[in-house]
Image 1 (tube, rainbow, N blue to C red):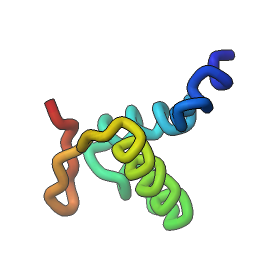
Image 2 (image 1 turned 45 degrees about the vertical axis):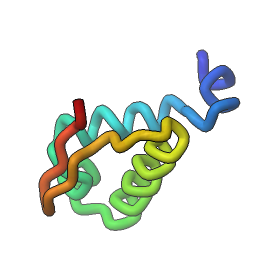
Image 3 (image 1 turned 90 degrees about the vertical axis):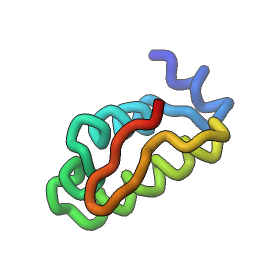
Image 4 (image 1 turned 180 degrees about the vertical axis):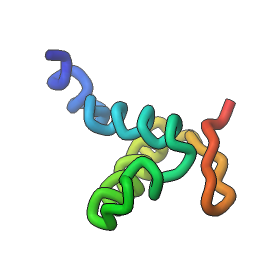
Length: 69
């Protein structure tokens, strides 16, 4: 519904859903449920969000990641 608004800045509902899924799961691998293609997609989407927003969204300590303040 609001996707066109987000797309102008590189934000998308898919990327925001990924952010929530990864945060809830505690790792990209857990959120992707073992699907290596999905894991790669999630990793890329998180990286793109961080670049677009200009801030680090997760603290990474393999294999867990936690949302930053």
